[in-house]
Image (cartoon, rainbow, N blue to C red; front, side, top):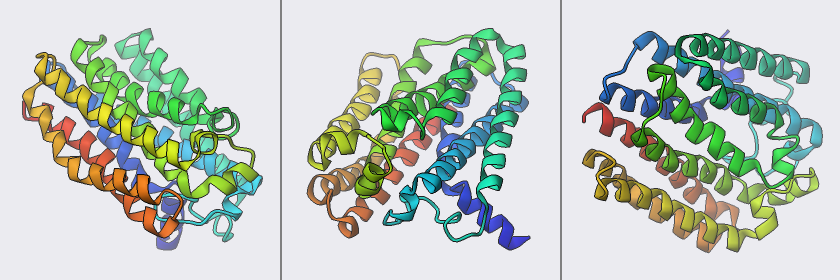
Length: 296
């Protein structure tokens, strides 16, 4: 039993599911700060988002196994797939079944929350479901993977959680949904650097392949700066709580990630620390935004 749990935890890339938890926390924190909070619906939203995140990871693992991508990647703790299918610890049919099951359960939770909050919630749920299925097979081959992930597994999670709890949207939550969307896209972008050759051979065409690592590193740097500037601008203009500046505590990690990307984008062993810093930036910034509104 213990071995099976470890295998499937690796297969769904369990540590990365923290991203979904923190994104839901942001939407829930803003709703609570504005006087709207239901613990049951909040927890259901979190379970639903975590399941759909697990689903997209499973679809991705299944597809990359069959396209051969995961047979040629140089695995790091942050990229290259889990290796679970390649090692024979799980089966292709089992992974696909798990992907479909988690997606359907997540959609069922979404239907219930839509019944509670309003049909508009489906405007966030349906694109997320479509992106889950289409990401690896189509979006990642049309240079739309990063954008789709940023919108559906970033901004839409924050907005959808808030809407599920309030039945509406506010200027504050729309503003706050922008940095997490950018950061989610950047999490994917930097993790693509080591897999360029394997991805190209497997038929993918993402931004790092299209731009080359140097220009992709510049894009990463500029986009990361924008995510922080959006938060600062929100405070200066009186749209966001000053507590949101807590998110600036991740700036040292951001600097490490940027320097690593710009200097070592083509050198895997030197890039890995930057990739780790990038994970810290994304998760840390999202968590601190949520904390800012829980203590507001």
